[in-house]
Image (cartoon, rainbow, N blue to C red; front, side):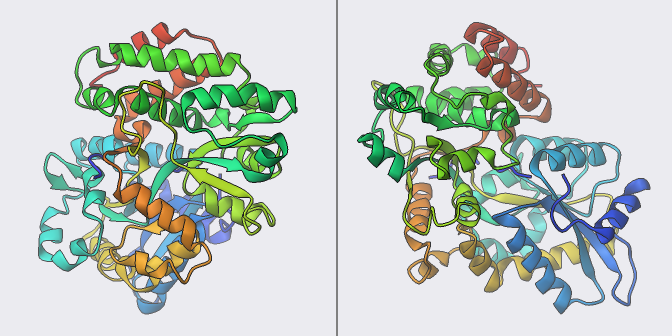
Length: 444
C-alpha cells in the first residue's frame, strides 16, 4: 500500500512562444496572472513541466477544456524541471503564482498551506465524491495536510526503477543484478569493456537522491525516513544511514557511475542517452524514463532493448524488496489569491477534463500509468502494455510507496538535502558530515 506519498524535467519549453512570454510578463502584478473576461480571454493560468513524456498529455487536457469552455479558458506555460521549481518558488513567495499551482504535494504543499497560499479543498471533495472516487485512494496522502485536502491528485503514479540495456548485458555476458552484491560484481566487468556501469545526471542532484532513497529502504526499511519526516531529532543518525552513505561512496570509488556524472543534467536527458546508445549499462530512474527513451532512443525500446526491474535487495537488509519510492501522483492546488471566478474555472477543470475518458488514454499513450481507477483495462491493447502492467503491479503491490524525499520534506530541508547529496557524490563531505548537516535541518 502507499503510505506516503518526479519528475522532474525540464527552461522554457518547446511550446513557450509569444503567448507564453506575454503570460510571463503578466506576472508582474500581485496575484494570479489569469485575466477575467468573456469573449475567449483566459481566466485562469497554469504552469507545469515541459518535455516528454508529460507535456503532450498536459497540453491535450488544456486543449480539451478550452475547446469546451471558450469563454473561460486556461492559459499555460511549460518549463523544464529545475526552471519550473525555481519560478514557482519565487512567484509564490512574491504573491504572483498562477491560479493552478502544479506540484508534487508533500512538504512543499505543506509550506503553502502554512503560509495560507492555497485553498482547502476538503469540502469540495466531500461535495464531489464522484471525483474523489475515480482516483487512486493512495494518491491523496501527499495532497493532505493536517487531515485536510489541499490539492487535486492527477496525472500518474511514478515509481523509481532500475533500467538496463539488454544488448550491452548480452555482449558482456552477464545477467541483471538480483542484489546489491551483484551490482558491485558487475561494476568492474562493465568498466573492463569501457562501458559505464551506471548512467547518472548528477548535476540535477535529485537523480543522485534516488540512489539514497532506495539504498536506505533496502538496508533498513521505510521506518528511518519516516522518523525524519516526523521531525524526530537526530533521526538521520540511525546507523543504517551511515551504512547507506558509505555504500554510495564505495560505488563512486569503484567507478560505478559514468565519468563526469556531476556535469550531466537530467533535464537534457543526456543520462538516458548514455543508456540507449550503449555507453552505459544501467540507470536508476523514474518510470517516466520509458516514454523518453521510446521517443528519443530510436528503435531501442521498439526492438525490446530496454530492460527494467524493481531495485534489488541489499544483502542482509531489512527493507521489503517490494517497497517503492517515487511520485504517488502529481497535484494541482488553487491559489488562495485567485478570484472566485478563477477558482470556479479551476474546479471545473478538476471535475471534468482531468477525469474524463480521454485523460487516461493520453497518459497511457505517453508510457505512464494514470491514477484513474480502471485504467489498467486499457493496457492490453496498448503497445506499452507489458511495461504499464509492470508499473501498475509494482505500485499497487508495494508494501510501502514512499514519496521522494525532496518532495516529502519542507523546501528548506529539501534544498539542504540536495546540496549535501551533491557534495556527498563529489566526495566533498564524508558520510558523517552529511548526517550532521541533515540533522541540523530536521523539522525546519
